Image (cartoon, rainbow over all chains, first blue to last red):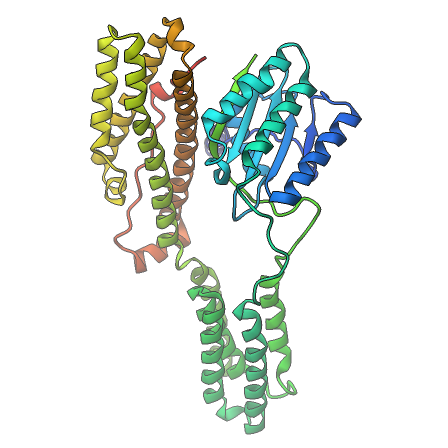
Length: 285
Length: 196
């Protein structure tokens, strides 16, 4: 028993070592995360304002982060994981950029999201670091370095994307079909109640089938459709005749399904969910 | 009679609840692995596309470093013949050969970059600096793509080896086999970093 326990612990330990991720700072929807305290309040607000304006115009998300410690990670390794963790950039465009400064390790990195690798290739990122950022950093002038680096980055990426237009796309099919399904099931439930419990097998098959087909059209998930088919079939078949109009179980079904559409969210820091693949460049001074 | 039916229905429901949501997991994870494999292959290709330019530039300044330059060119030729197709992923030998070829190119490249340290004029060449930045970025992307691939294969193999997934696979996807993963070689733990 003790042996088993120690083996389990050992395996867990090995897994954490193999797939460990660094501890990331909180972003709190801010575009300037100054953990190392390199900027004063005025500088931070100024940077923040410019980055926010850029996002409004182009939907690109650029975030400056300063770190006290890279926790022993290579800055490139840390950078892309941080970018993915925070989900910088719009999900469908992956248009995020991180400017990471680690003053204690004397390392700086521009981490470029997948969608901006074309306009901000590694060579460009590298020359921005070498010629725009490092000359200032070498004299300890962090704000000026970040400032001129950000200016060049924004200049490079500004033409790539337009902000998402405000008019919404058509309602998803499922949203329209759902009320139809609901009404159809109510109708069939009422018929089955009127006919008495012995003749439920036909309405059960019909309503089960409808539920399956419609949910298939809505979600294209085989498991869910089959499950709904069986569930509606059984519920219609076995539903007790005393339960009035039989609409109570359908309405509970509607609750669980409608949660699938609950994913709309917003916020000052729009979108998120962009991904990174290790593009960009690093430098040290 | 009715009670038996109800119990049967509940049992069916429970089985459906456990199994049905996972019924597509094996092909989904399989596709996932294929996607990450081709992403990784892309990044390796991108590295190999950088090499002719790099070799030409280095030759201009360090033409008598023939050994290293030939090694790189040869390693690239070897890599050029291989692609990380789904068949390779299921074939331990082919996978190993692929990994070895790429590792060979990695070490040849790191030797080349080490040699360039001795040529200050080369290191001041704008073109070379650009190539160096691109190569560094590409090596970095390879590392990321490799990590993603390893994660995807881990997920796929776990699905095939643990219980509900194992049953589903035995019933519906008997041809599914666990996939090959990268082993962290000694060469990898001492990552050939392109240093400035």
